[in-house]
Image (cartoon, rainbow, N blue to C red):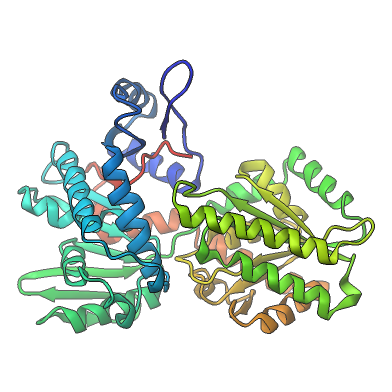
Length: 476
């Protein structure tokens, strides 16, 4: 991400697993990452030299796409996050179907397509990431670019009854079908997409099973598959054994003597169900007075999209709810909720994973949710318990050991949380062994290999994929 600084603009390198994995494949294949800088043109008018220097260091090209303030407002804040995001997460009442947002979205997708067209050769693969750039393949075709394109959706895909709310539903479906490969997180998402195509695209022929299919419209055929994204499990296992992590985890435990620790880690977003989680914890303590003073919730909330009014309102509501619950339940020597509003990464986050007896992961809807997988990978002692929303994409993989809950059923959540807190050591071990094995076998690199292989790029290492994203890869 390019940011302003006192000595001039600078790049902040990304540290996430996806960024790390894509860096490796791009470097091996002399690829390019085409992405938004994260800043607006008015703030960073002369940032290109930064990306040229960074490209030389990284071993692959960084191609910045800069948005104006108006483009950011209409395309990113508007269409992407006030239409697609709420609709695809089952919140149609929060959508603002502004025609000007659609025009901004088309304009910016066209801008990205022009940036790709300048770099892509006929043998290249353009790998497009996420809902910000659904129109990419269609726009490339308009520019006469004939290279292969693959699209991966990181968020859920809605069922037809929800998708029909979108005024531009047919345009988005046709745009997705212009890709050679479209990947989804879960079989449910792939099935929702196929049903939408079947109902809204006349003449579409769909062949295939639960995890893979081919959709033909006229002479155009698109492969559709399921590729659940994951984490670098070995990295989390290794980090969990570092001395600094163990020391911090021990310190957290010592601050809560004789108590169980429940951990929530969520980005600030209404889809994460943070208020519902806090209310469930309140009900747990009120309905089980024996747990008062014996269990503490550490709730980490990662700042996100703070320029969008609705997110600021969510922050204020959560702040007030935490204060209300602590005011009601706190007793001498015990505060029931420790609320941490900041981003924790690397060893700091791993220490919380190591310290927690229970991971409390209950989004109302989530494409995947990597926190659940990170917690399991970090449990080197094969103990602990995972309470996981059935509406998280990760539930499709982690049902082997997690306690699955309906986050809207507060009493059911409370019962599962109480069960997790009292789970015998042998049951913890059996469940966590299954969870760790699943995360280890389906790690980030298997996801990457399976997607690249399905796209055809895995068989052609000499080709240079271009990863196109709405955000610059150096973002943290």
